[in-house]
Length: 148
Image (tube, rainbow, N blue to C red; front, side, top):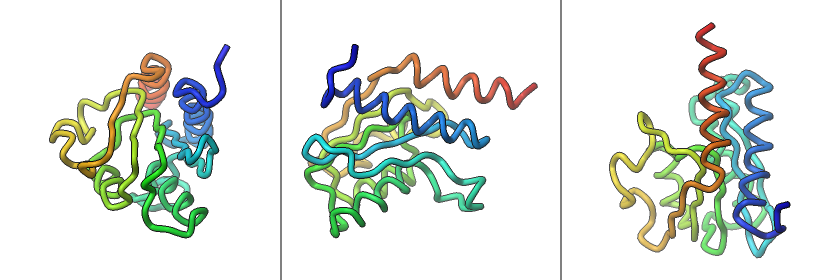
């Protein structure tokens, strides 16, 4: 049983968003942004649907959270995302000055950690591996189906 307001709980919410992406034929990445224990933004990949290469879950969530708060800065917020952000998303997270980033599965090919944590704002805390197996399996299963 998940405890509300826990990292596991919020990552489960991001996984639900990732499932929406998978159901739409998108790479299954989901994200939520939390501020003061409240989810203020939910998003999933929409690059195919919107025909927009920048429509990653993280970017969509940043936009929604900034709109909700009326601020371009997300200093008291945490992003939960099912897959390690790419370099583009890490740049957006840097500029948002988000307080904390938590991701589930690593992305060996496109993840920003290939280049180091320095791509995030110096004040941003980073955690990973929350629900790693579930998040990783979603992406693996998606690409296995695509190859068939």
